[in-house]
Image (cartoon, rainbow, N blue to C red; front, side, top):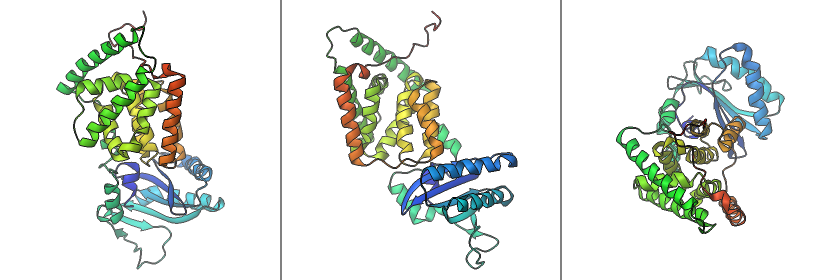
Length: 342
């Protein structure tokens, strides 16, 4: 109960969280809204158990948030379905108004009928989550709002910086003797520069931020930028890509939002991953990588990537940039003042 808000990115007050373990490794943490119609309950449970079978999850814990009449029928249905698939149930809990009830503990001295009060914020697990750089916002609305574009004077400054960055890119794209590896090299160096700003706690200047947005429209620049969290740390990378997604010109938000979504997906923040992927699709409705992430979410958390896996990924991307450098070139969005029908 203490760690769940940090796994999903906010403090839930309704719905169901399924947490699965393989030995001591947490492999799945998914929060879902419960269907409005009781007739949809069996299909909901079937899909969730199918996901756990797919993940080969031998042990699970279920935490329901809300009143007993809403949560209890789902707990009974899950108990039957999980037992039928030989998945061990660690516990089944219901949380409401800072109290919890266990469906499995029969001892009233341990789990009294009136519920047991708890304070997740004072738990050691929560403290370790904070030290690891995880964040639990007050609710999912706050998580979603965190990714919305900035406005006011900051937006005016970024609009001007983006126009200048676009003109700079167009001039280089029109240069006949430009080194074919320029875009990948420039993208990698500039991504490092922006990460260094984030690591030092400095705001990224508008010109640098706009140039990053242009460079990230190159697929290989986007992909190599993702791998840099291996060097700078997940916490810094998360902060960087949230800031870039919010501040950048909305037309260029698809790539940084997708980087954030993929990073969140691999570190257990499935709700943030979903919102970031949706934010990417607001900028570019058919962005393939964002659509892929959204399609992956119902199947739980992928294992966190090891340093060796990230190093291999970076090596593969660099080799591809050597073979096909054109995949690092910017693909600039259509200017908003251009008639798309002409």
